[in-house]
Image 1 (cartoon, rainbow, N blue to C red):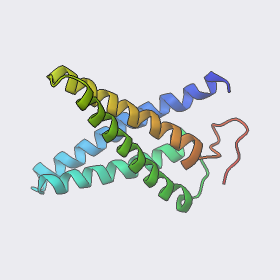
Image 2: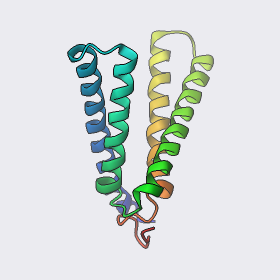
Image 3: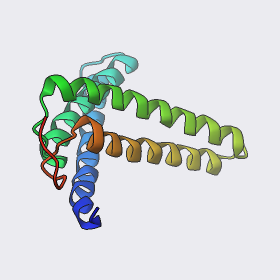
Image 4: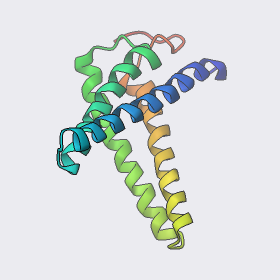
Length: 141
């Protein structure tokens, strides 16, 4: 595989991640402080908004997929859940293995976030949105 063929989707994925994070945070803060929602409810709304934005932009902008929403949507949900599970395992594993310092806890969080981000990119590219137009030789499903 040509590495340059991966660069475009990686850059777009990073941009979507930043936008997605901003949207989720804005919804959380707007719901909690503007609508006076309970923090857990505001958090759930923010993550739901982020999930929706992430799905739409990853499908259309990042991977340029023509995969049917009825197929890709459930796959994206499973991928996000699996990657979140991986995130928690990395976090807990590193918290167990590293000393109980603030720096070690921050490193554990960063590593867990990295595991989530990389694994979601891979699952999105090769399973959720398989057949993306940005993948050479791939076909739509």
